[in-house]
Amino acid sequence: MRLWDGFSITPRQGESLATIKIHSRRTLAQLVLKGDVAFGDEFAAGNIEIDGDLVALLVELYGSRAQQRSFLARVVELLFRNRPRSNTLQGSRDHIHHHYDIGNAFYKLWLDHEMQYTCAYFPEPDMSLEAAQQAKMDHICRKLRLEPGDRVVEAGCGWGSLARHMALHYGAKVTAWNISHEQARYATERAKAEGYDDRVRYVEDDYRNISGEYDVFVSVGMLEHVGEQNYSALGSVVDTCLAADGRALIHTIGRNQPKLMNAWIEKRIFPGAYPPTLREMMGILEPNNFSVLDVENLRLHYARTLEHWLLRYDDASDEVVEMFDPAFARAWRLYLCGSIAAFLYGSLQLFQVLFARGRDNTVPWSRQHQYLS
Image (cartoon, rainbow, N blue to C red; front, side):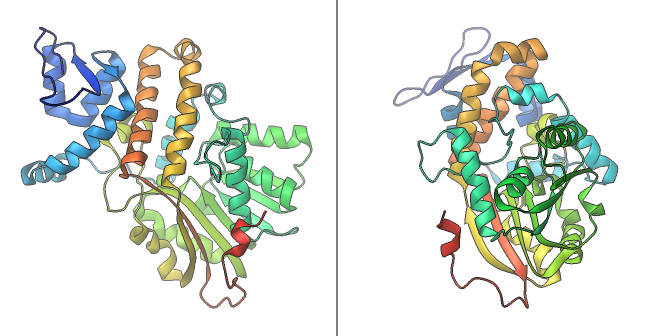
C-alpha cells in the first residue's frame, strides 16, 4: 500500500501481488467509513489505483478478510449494512433498467455473438467463448430432455439466445418473459428478421404474470434478481404453469452460506441482487412438492467465462470510455475482476437445479442423457 505522501507498507515476506495506491487523505477516510462502497467508488473515480494483478489481489483480499474478521466487525456489518433493495413489480423494473438497459451496443463489445450474459459451460477448458456458450445451452436442453413440440416458458430471457436455441435446434415452441425493454426489443426484432417468430414469442412483462400451461420451465440468470422474499411467488408460478409431467431448471449465481451481495455491486451495478444458498432455493421447491433431480455447480466455469469477458472488455476499453466516461469504464472493470475473484475464491457459486413434480414417475433413471450429444 502506498499513500499520497509517499508512506508505504510492503510485505514482510515474499513478493507483493500488487500495490494499492491511495491518492488522498479524504479517500483513506472514505475507506474507513464506507468500506466496500468507498473502495468501488474511489477506484472508479481514479482516487485508488492498483499496480499489478487486480484479480489476484482481490482473491487475496477475500481470503484475508474471511480469516481476520473480528466479532465486532461482523456485528457492525449486521447493524449498519443495508439490505438489498426490494424487488417489487416496479422495483424489479427499475433495477433491471439500471443494469440491462444501458445500451445493447455496450454489451455487444464483449459478449459472444449470441449475446449471452450468463455462465458458459466448458467441457473442454480451452474452448472458445462462443463454443462454450453453445455448449451451455445444449447442456441445459439435454438436462430438460427437450423434444420437438415441447411448450417452453422461460423466465428472464436476456437477449433471447436460449429461447432461440431451443426453437431452432430442438423444435420447441417457446414463450420468453423479460422486463428489460432493450433486451426484449432486440430479441423480438431478431426473431422477426430471421424468421422464427412463429416459434418464439418474447413478452415484455414480469415473471409473476406468466400464465398458461407448459412442458418445460427454465430460468437462467434471473433468480439473482428475484429476492428471497419473492421465492414463494416464483414457486407458485412454476407450480401453476407446469404440466403434470413437466420439467424445470433454474440456473443461478449462489452461495454456500447466506450472505448479502457485495455492497458496492448492489449499490452501483446490480441493485436488488441477492445470490441464494441451495437451502434458500428450496423455498421455491418445497412448498410445491417439487423433487430435486440434479444439482450441478459450475463455479469454475463462471470464472473462466468472466476471464473471456474481461479480455474482450479490455480490448474494447477505448470504446467503453467513448460511450460513457472513464469512471464507468473503471467501475465495470472492477466489477468483472471482482466477480472472477469471487468465483475463484469460492465466495460465489453457480448452481443449476433440475426438478420435477414429486409424483412424476417419468423422470429418468440416470443422468446419462445429460452428457450424450
